[in-house]
Amino acid sequence: VQLVESGGGLVQPGGSLRLSCTASGINLGLYAIGWFRQVPGKEHEGVSCISSSDATTHYVDFVKGRFTISRDNLKNAVYLQMNSLKPEDTAVYYCATQRHSRKCSGSYYYFDFGSWGQGTQVTVSS
Image (cartoon, rainbow, N blue to C red; front, side, top):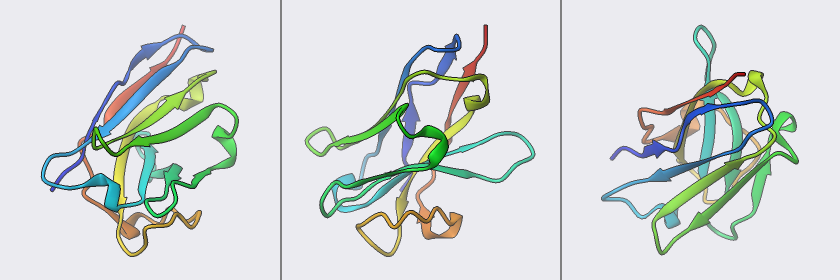
């Protein structure tokens, strides 16, 4: 099973994008879902997570107040609303299912997540 990310694109600094994470053959509502990003030459970097059990959310410091994660279990989707985008937010963004718990812990250890998609490119540039 593989997740599918969409919604990326080119946006000016200060702009907004909403990323979507969907899947077929898997009920995303049963999983905590994490959003990550990666720039060339660097490892995946955790961005945000939303729990399955109670929909609690976690954000890393550099996106707090700018990004909002949400889920719609009827649509089998998880979203990442990104506002006040900065050039340093430029990356390929991925979503993934958390393996061992339905609740986000604040840890974004790569191997605790699975079903990685192909990612969606976000470019913030004037």
